[in-house]
Length: 513
Image 1 (cartoon, helix red, strand yellow):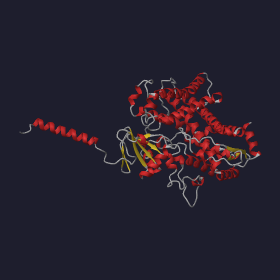
Image 2 (tube, helix red, strand yellow):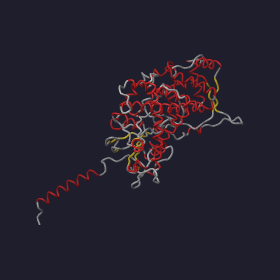
Image 3 (tube, one colour):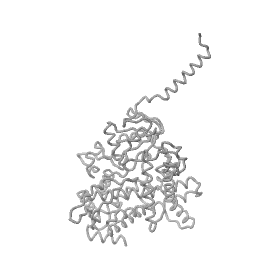
Image 4 (tube, one colour):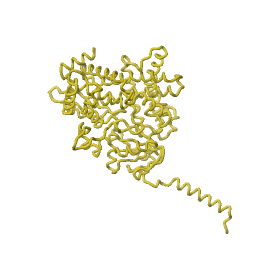
C-alpha cells in the first residue's frame, strides 16, 4: 500500500524531532575530566570528604593522573583544580565565563546574604569591586598606615603583658583595626560580642560553601517546607544564621548613619561612601552595596590577618633558625632604636619572603571559594559543562613540587633571588587570596598589616618553645593541623615570648606614650 504524502510528511517531521533530541541528549564529544566512579542518581555523594577535603582532592589528582578532577553529587557537577596551570588557564585567562558564583539556595534564598564573596557575577558585583578599588587599591591604602602602626604598637603591648593570651590579642587588634577602617568605630566594650558573632558567621560560611552540606541545594523545593517537619533542621539553621549575619552587618552600619545625621562624622569606608550618595535611603541599591561591602571588610579582613599571624607565630616556634635570620636582617636595617616602618619594607627582603612562605606553607584558605561556569567549555581535551562549580585547591597548588621544590620544607629563601635557582611563584599572585576576577580585593591591606605586625614582633621579642614541668620542650607540630573554619587557624599552642633587650622595651614604651 503506497504511503500518502501526509504520512510521509509526518514521518519526516518525527524523524527531524528524533534527531534533534538524540543530538541534544547524547554525550559530549569530549570526555569529562577523570574522577571517582559515580553511583546512579547520587553520583559521588558518599565520596565527599568530611574533613580536610583539600587533601583528599589532592590525592584524587595523583590517583587519576590529572590536575583537574570531576565529580557529581545528586546531579550537580564540580571540578577541582589542583595546579597553578589549570587555575590560571581557567580562572584567569577564561575569567569571562569562570567568574560567577554557584547559585546557593541556603546563601541566596534562605539567608538573603549579599556580601561580596557570595555575589553572583553581574552589575551588583561590579559595584562591590568598584567600591573596593576606590578605597583599597595599593595606591590608596597608604592612608591606613597610621592606624595599622597604632594597632601594631598596641598588639606589642598586649603580648608583652600576657603572651599566653596571644590569640585573644590578635583577634582584638585585627578586629578593632578592621572596624575602624570600615566604620570609624572602636570595639572596646563590644569586643566580645562582635568577635563571638564574627566567629559564628565564619562557621556558617564554612558549612555553606562545602559541597553536600545541605540537601536543599539538590532539592530546592525543600526550602518551602516548614521548620517543624523532621529533617528540616536546615530551616532553623538558616533563621539563626540570617539573624547573626544581620547583626554583624546592620548594627555598626546604622550607628555610622546615626552619627552622620548628628554631624559626628569620623572618617571611614562607610562615612566616605555615604557622603558620595545623594539618597541614603535603605531602598537605594548603592546604600545596600556600601552596607554589604563594609560587612565583608570587617568579617573577612580581620579573620585573614588573625589567621596569618597565628601561623606566623607557630612558624617562629617551629623554625628558630628562620627566626634568627629574620632578626639579623631587622637588626642590620632597623637596629634596636626604633620599630619597623612601612618605608623599610624594600630593605627587608627576608621578612617579605618569610611572610610569603608562611602563607604558602600553612595556607589560610586551603580550598578557595567556588567559581561557576556560565558556558560549556573544553580544556585540555576535557568537557566542562556550563553550570559547573569550579574550586581551586590552593593547598595542592602551594604544595606542588613542580612549583615549589621540597614543598613540605619551610624555606623563605625560595622567594629570594639566587643564581642557582629562579624565584618561585608568589603566593599573593594566586592561591593565597583567590583567583582571577574573584581574587580578594582587600589583599593589599591584609598584606601590609601582616608585614608590619610580623616585623615588629620579631624586632621586640624572641619566640621559643615552652617547656613542661620537667624542663622538656613542648612539641607543637600538632598545631599544624588546622581547626575547621572558613579560614584555617591553628589550634592553641604554647610558646615563650621574651623581650630581646631593654632598648627595644624603651622604644615600645616611648611609642605608647
